[in-house]
Image 1: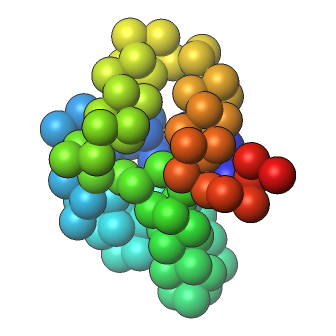
Image 2 (image 1 turned 120 degrees about the horizontal axis):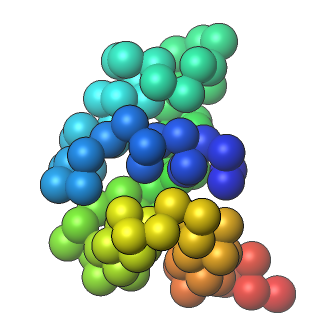
Amino acid sequence: MLKELTALLAVCPSEATRDDYWRAVVEENVLDKATASTRRWTVQRLSELYALDLSVVIFRGLRFFRDRDPNSVPLLALLCGLARDPLLRN
């Protein structure tokens, strides 16, 4: 999901809302997925791992640091995923 997260953060502005991320993936197909169901599944999984919502502190931190250093996305994504997904921690 790193490729998808990186692409999504690149096309959505820093102040994007959760709905903006969903719209970008599902309606605008910015991740270039073949089917609508794949787009919905992808944005659902991205939301589970990273929240895609600035009201969630960990995503706000990911977005803040990504905007300052785009090369930090792999480490930020791992840290965010570890914090939010218990299966990833095991």
